[in-house]
Image 1: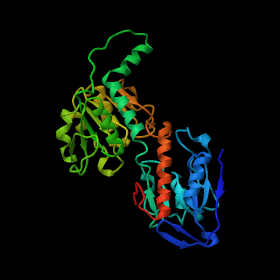
Image 2: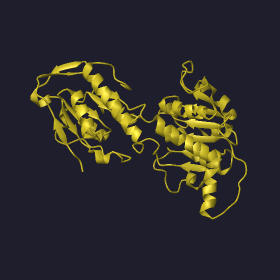
Image 3: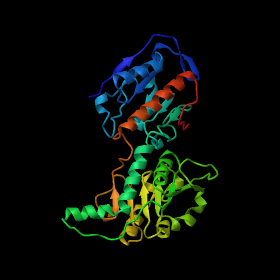
Length: 348
C-alpha cells in the first residue's frame, strides 16, 4: 500500500541550496521522497527540509523488498522540485520545475538522456552505498569457483560422493580489477585480506586507490591479462567499456583464471564467454549482471556448469546496511543542499 504524507510550513521565500527564490503558492517547492522510512527517519528528513513540503511515497514495510515501487504522485508533478528515488523517466520528464534528482542507485544512466531533466537541474547518485554487498557477492562467487563448489553441489543433487581434483586459492593469487571506484576497491580489499595481490585498471592510473597494490591504465590491459588468476569487473556503463572483455581478451586469460562481473552486463561479451567456458579455456565465471537482462532461458550461459549466475541482486536492498547507507547519503545531501554546500556524488 502506498502511503502519502505531506508536511509543510508557511513561508514566502525558501532557500534551496544556493537558489534563493520567492515562490508563489502555485510554485512553492515540493519534495517527493521515495525512501521506505521509519517515523523517526521521516522526522529527520522533515527537519532537514526546513519547512519545504514533502511527500513520503513508501512505508517501512517495503524496506526489505529488493526493488522499491517508484511512482511519483499524479496531479502535481509540475510542482516537484526535489526527488529522492528512481522514478520512471517519463515521470521525471513531467517535472518541469525539477531542481535536483537524488537517485537511490549508484548508476544514473537512465537520467542522462538529453531533455529528460530541465537545464541546470542537479543529478546525484547513491555511490558508496553498495560497496560492501556487491564486493561480497563478487568475492563469494570467486571463491566458490576456485574451490569448485558449483560442481560439488551438482554432485550432491545426484547423490554422488566423488572427489573432483585440484582447486585453487586466492592466497598468493593476482587479481585484476576493472573499475576502481567504490565497488572495485571494496572487492580489492577483500582479496588483499586473504593474501592476494591486486591490480587496478583505470583511465588515470597515476592516482592511487585504497585496496590496490598496483595501478595501470587501460592501455596495459592486454599485457596484464595473461598473468592474472582473477579478473573482476565493477565498471559503470559507457560506450568505452562495451565488451571490454571480448572474445579476444577472453583468449588471453589463463586456463585456471576466474572471471567475475557485478558492474554492467555489456562489459563482457556473454556469447563469447559461453564459448570460452564450454571449451574449458578458463576456470569459471561468476555473473551478477549479463547481456541482455534478463538472460533469456535459451542463452548458452545457463548450461555452463562452471558459470554462476545471479539476477542482478548483488546490490539492491536485501542487505540492511545498504538501505542505511542510502538513507544517510540522501539525508546528508538534503542538509547540504539546504545549506548551499557541494553535494556528494554529483554527476551533473
